[in-house]
Amino acid sequence: MKKFKMYSYTILLIISMIFVCPLIFRQIWKSSAPQKNTDPIPPAATEESTDPIQSNSEVIQQNNTVTTDNMIATEAVQPTQAPTEPPIQFVQGDISYFDDVLFIGDSRTVGISEYGTLKNADFFCNTGMSVYNLNKARESIDGIGSVTLESLLSSKTYGKIYFMLGINELGYEMSQTIDKYRGWIDFLRQKQPDAIIFIQANLHVTKARSDSDSYITNPNINTLNGAISRFADGKHIFFIDPNEYFDDETGSLRQDYTNDNVHLTGIHYQEWCNWLCTKTVQTAQSQPTSETTSAITSSGPVQ
Image 1 (cartoon, helix red, strand yellow):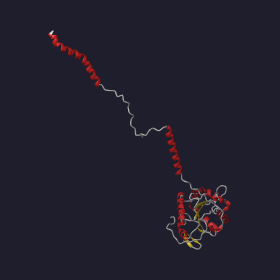
Image 2 (cartoon, rainbow, N blue to C red; image 1 turned 135 degrees about the horizontal axis):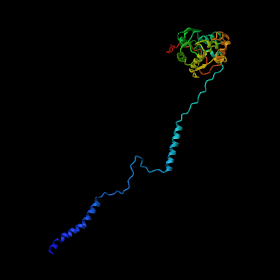
Image 3 (tube, helix red, strand yellow; image 1 turned 90 degrees about the vertical axis):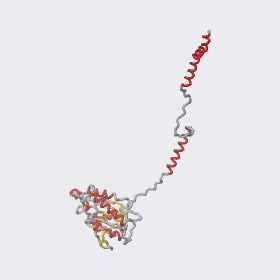
Image 4 (cartoon, helix red, strand yellow; image 1 turned 30 degrees about the vertical axis):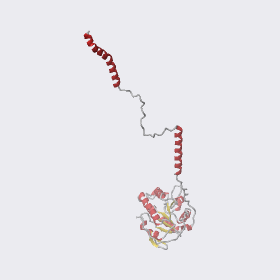
């Protein structure tokens, strides 16, 4: 009995431990277990504005305002188109129109000088003249004497210049001839900036001559005429084509207008002069002038 009493405390302690230890272990396990986060996940941060969300009606109204503003801005910067000037038309003139005219050309222009009716104009021309030798030519001009073209243009002011070369150049490389031709037109504009320049198309030859020649053919003449016609601007430089008057139904020089298949007979040069009177232009700079000047510009002739 004494032994039981002596171990009774020990037994009670053991029994207590049996019941208490599970409770202690259970509490420890609950404390160490990971807790589940039940808080709501906040939205991810963005770079957009934190302003309150607009209603659909507000967005539509704002877009309409922006569109209207853009339309107004676009209309405000629209350039005002300047009225286009109507093209200058050819009109009928008379002989006095040629009081301040200079003709430059080859044998066809010689024909106008000798057989035509425009005796009041100046003529710088010879039968073999071309864009390749024009810079070396010297011709006699009434009241001035024998001069080169550069000297003439430096000493006398012309209101209109008629330029017709090309028939003597058909044996040369076409592109080279066209470049030379352009150079002479530029030269005339530099020396006489106020003059109206008329580029005359080269006259066709007869069909018989065209069909029998290697170089002087109407197709070659048409190619050259087409190229030089593009130098005209309709304001200061004009292209006129006398073939519209002298051609037959084949697009060739009329056989009954020539004795050599190339040049007009004398009376038809008078018709040419009459035709030229139908191709005048009236501008502020086209009025006849006899002004002369000794000023010599720095630009030289085409080489």
